Amino acid sequence: MSLTSIFYRLTGAFVSLMILSLVLHWMIRQIPGSYDDFIRSEDPATVASGDAINKTLLPLFYFSVVPDFNTVQKEDPASLTIQDILPRFRWNASNNIFHRWLFNNSNSFRDGKSVSEKVTIALGWTLIIQLPALLLIIICGFTLAEWSLRTTKYKLAATVTQALTILHSMPAFWLANLLLIIFAGGLFAILPSSLVMSDVRSPFQLWIKAPQYLILPVLCILLPSLSVIYQLVRRQMILRMEEPFWARLIASGISKKTGFRRELRPLVLIPLAAWFASAIPMLITGSLIIENIFSIPGTGRLLYQSIAFRDWPVAHALILLAAFMTILGIAVADLIQWVLDPRLRRQNSEQRD
Image (cartoon, rainbow, N blue to C red; front, side, top):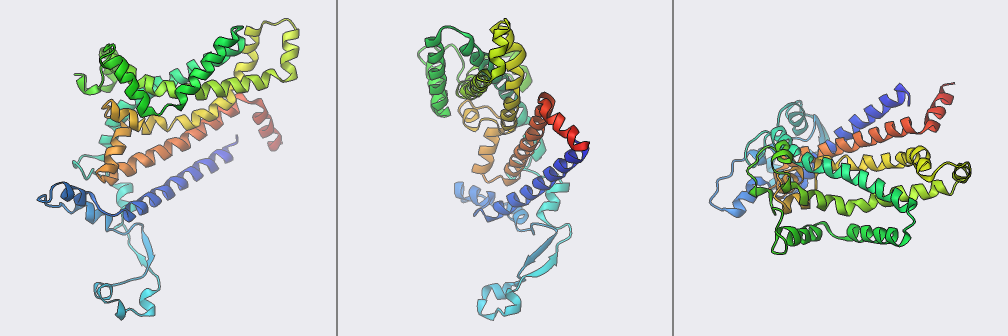
């Protein structure tokens, strides 16, 4: 991985984000209705602020190539000529949506708060759930996969595999409600059902002062995702154990436990890094269904509410942040694979020579 390839990747990532931002702005403009329309539909007596309408009526970019109609021609299409229909180049300068989004801090249509402030607060609540869940998914999945291949209790290993597959097939909302009925309902009632019942208002103090509120949300993320890592690691280990080097390794007298630790684990970490790239955006977007069921004010719930209320500045920021984290995840996965796989480093050195 040379400096040139890193430069090309960073440049491509920047261009991709800019294009995605423009596409998102364009898509938002095509969606009928605005925040003011939504408020009036809920309460017809409400007076529209006009902020949402004015912001979406601005030109999209620094320049436009569109037909230049005036108000009279729009009301009387018969007066249009060929020259009026042909696209014309128009310079919009800084009076456009993209410039205001890039250099000015946008505010929410819903409450007028800063978008960056709302996203930062919601991100803290999402991270306290997603980070432990992601860590447990990797550790438990890796451990169970290695145990299933080392154990002599084959029926128990097959039962674990089937159980993880069943958990993976369960819809998130169904599993969440099932856990609520068992552990927070009338059956046992040993865990709280919602974060609303907690007096702690800081997300990072919740694990210290009231961790019981996070057990069920973490389980709802952990249990369905555990099968993915379990199957990935197990399949890669089986493929490596079928190669000739593993038979020679066992024939040399080395124990299976040592062989797993020294030989198989480093090889399995390479494809695991690719999965890690897809898991990083989860840290931003959160789990939309889980956060709504347990009333967690994270980014997933914020994204749902922003789309439902047509609060497009907040929705745009969250989607773009998730795209950035996806690109970052791919870059981190490439770096991890380059560090763990000596073949990539050897290929890079041969290309330089």
